[in-house]
Image (cartoon, rainbow, N blue to C red; front, side, top):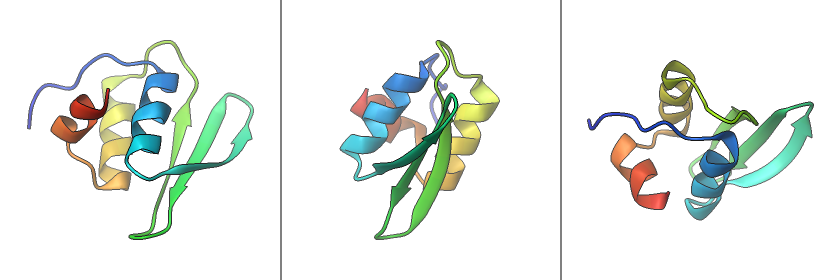
Length: 73
């Protein structure tokens, strides 16, 4: 697994949308994204910079590798 990049919340949302996720709703500064097939759901904070631990959790929940995320950015 490659090193996780420093990315913003909007960048992660755009990358996940390219991978088939849709925005279901927003609660405050957190955007809930969902993919139906195969099912996956995650919450992305709308921060200027997402912590690496939070980004790692998003990748684990969505079953996406760091390399796939970097490719979509």
